[in-house]
Length: 198
View 1 (tube, rainbow, N blue to C red):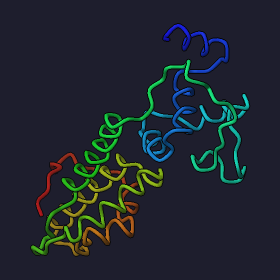
View 2 (cartoon, rainbow, N blue to C red):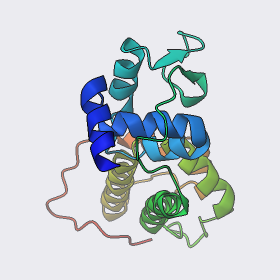
View 3 (cartoon, rainbow, N blue to C red):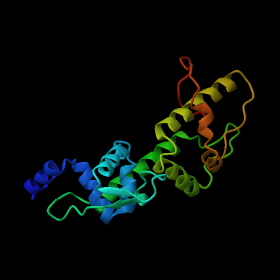
């Protein structure tokens, strides 16, 4: 079976990732979208190549390479043995998103400087935050850097006894993408350790 798969790849000038995508476009679109959102995949280039080779067609060219906008033109057949997304793959994907959420929630302060709890309605905030990630609206690493920038800036204001508005509640912070105002800020933090003090 492996020999047949290799022969198929060589004959059709396809990569194993492209065959994986083609099979799962037919068998498991929902989970395929989650899988392709993992950061190591540059799946748009793979889909563009499949489009040029006429393996797929776009329903609406203006929508682009969204999974639900793709029709598979060629059945690659059972002779090609490529794994589909099963429960094991799915659990790995879910764990990836759980880890992202845990890092976010561990970095976002639990209380304001006045002691007000900030982690309200975690379930709603989690759903919204992971939706941003899955749709590539935000970059998780950028968000974590922005949170740490805000923490440091707030420490500096407190040390200087300068006014700074309180931290937002978790759901408000996520809904308003509160990290965006700190993304472009350069941190001069040599004299301050990055740690939560709230």
